[in-house]
Image (tube, rainbow, N blue to C red; front, side, top):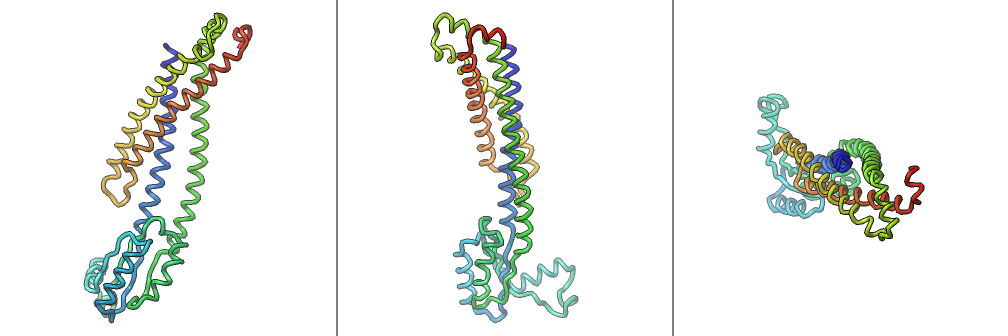
Length: 281
């Protein structure tokens, strides 16, 4: 009984560690997408653009694969926004309002990268009524470089922690099976089939894995709830229902799979062991 409790506690702590890694990976993925979707392309318009050309350009922008949303900002609205930023009238600083009308195009995350901007933006600058196109290619290039470095570090940490998780669960399970090695040898001596000997260990492993995963899931839900409250309703929604389901599902699958696999191999090790060797190991 004590061995079972010890194994359950050890497995729970390892699964919490594994869940934190999965949660961190998913949050990093969502954060990356949220940041990319907040990059905007500014399509500055000629003052002489006609209404038909304006409507046609808006239709064209909405149909592009890189477009998430399109917002039209008139010359008057752009001037008002500049007034708010400068704390006065633009004429006071610049001698006149230089703000043209524009379309603000928010990008889809999959297209918010230097390669896509280099591919699509030159064609946009050639459109009738377009004065200039401003897009954050240098900022995105720097973001991509930082992201690649962070991804490699996170991947290495995740791989290391996954290995540690397996080793720790395997050791906890092996100790539990080792404590009952004499029972295994006794059943072998009376002619019990290996499947019959293995069955109670596998059933116990299933319930241990399920209980450990449930406890780990409850602990993780507490942390996820705290993160969700801190995240609030801001622009960067990183704690989504999909993240919760994937994290808890991974913990449950890992809890059941690892405990049952480790138990299977540990029991098999003792089944292949000679009776005399069981007293020496």
